[in-house]
Image 1 (cartoon, one colour):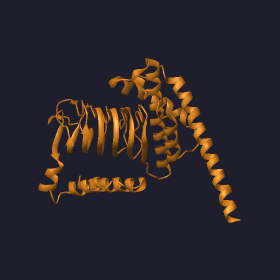
Image 2 (tube, rainbow, N blue to C red):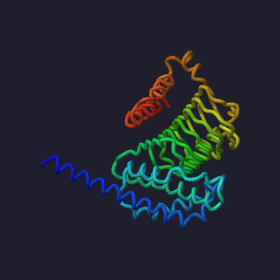
Image 3 (cartoon, rainbow, N blue to C red):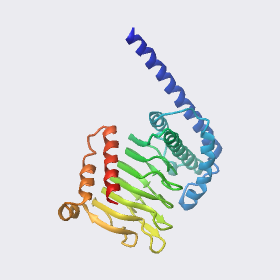
Image 4 (cartoon, one colour):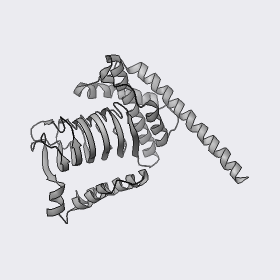
Length: 308
């Protein structure tokens, strides 16, 4: 009897999740159709201009039923592997922007709803090497974002702005054209970890005011052209401290990064420093479950907070 009840409950839950996903997918079609012609696809004007659209979309999404992080993951997988929008016509490109903006709004609405319940949003996503262009465009409400095994164009484009709540951002095993561009223009990200990233224009950024950008960035195995090309107003840093290993930092300018330190120097010369504890935790990501990786990221941020 008990097993039969469990079976009924499981069937009911599966039906609920299917209905929720269908609602999310239908709303995506509505948003893409309505806003494709309005969104911009490139540069600072895309960030500023698309934020107006972001606010309109967020108002519309209030009608969506409650959904979970698993539902959001299912949506991303359902919409993944679209054609490269940069090899198509302009309308296809702008559809990719609108869909990416919608994904950012979905993550933000989930985070806002969670916050109202007193629950943090530490979002982990394994892309299983699928493509999703403009993923989480303009998102800024989740407490932590961790992306792994993903491909795409302009991932997290313009994220972490406008009252940013995202304090930890981690990307691992990503093949990308433009990752984390135009981020934290108005706000500060505490920690950003990039590991095993292959592509072009990785974290090309502009700092437009003081105390914005990334406080601690950790990079390892970063390859590709155009990485870390920064511009800023005089006296502003886009990154306060950069820890690096096996990565090209030829574009990193001391005028944009206050401290540039190799992993080797940390290990040999700063043995008692909290950076060593953080690097040990970064080393430990491999082989862990998603839940364990989120817990590890949380430990990294806790160590950071104690030593700011």
